[in-house]
Amino acid sequence: MSHTAFFYGTLMAPPVLHRVIWGPSPPSTSVQKSLLTIRPAILHRFQRHKVKHADYPAILPANMSTSVRGTLVTGLTDGDIWRLDIFEGREYERRKVSVRLLQQTPRSAGVDAAIGDVSQAEEENIEGDEVEAEVYVWIAGKQRLEPEEWDFDHFVKEKMARWVGREPGEMDDGFHVLDVDDAVAAQKDPTGGRGLNGSITRELEKGAEEEVVRSAV
Image (cartoon, rainbow, N blue to C red; front, side):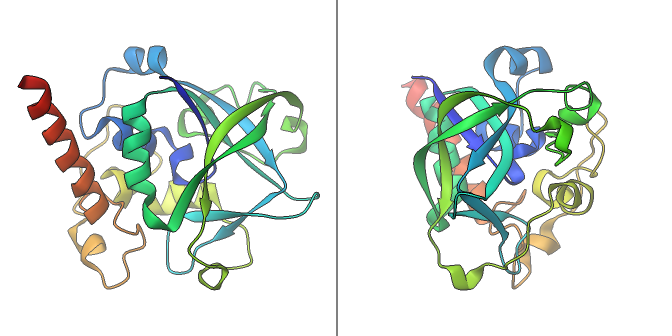
């Protein structure tokens, strides 16, 4: 079964999304493009917040004037959703929503799109078709959220390395693995266990190994 999901945080960055759904050895770039379609989209009547002491954001239902820009991903499998559910954990609940596709400009369709560019530029706010999608909504309490907006560009430049084990800003095959043990072992892990060596990542890897064993039986 094919799924469509709207992502508004760390999963807007393809390196993070690919690591979650395919593990540390994703398929080739050409195969990735044949499996998934990623397009800019907007979700109305929700608001995005920073999560206190964390790298990742949350969204909550809000009023008619609020909206959240993100990416719409089609072609996700049941297995991908299973892994995404584990990745998001108990802080989020997967719900069905309606989002609007955004018209791609030369900028958003270019190099920046390789890292999930979701610029707030007004000229890119041209809305198109409405699409039903699944989205992960925060259920862990408003007291854990900050009022200000989460910054995707800051995440990519300053934080993403500890999520994928690569230098931020390098979006090609030249990635190299970093030592992220210290970040994951910290008392307040800003990845929430979702980093390269985090508890959620280890659970995903364990699940993938068990799936291989079941397939071989």
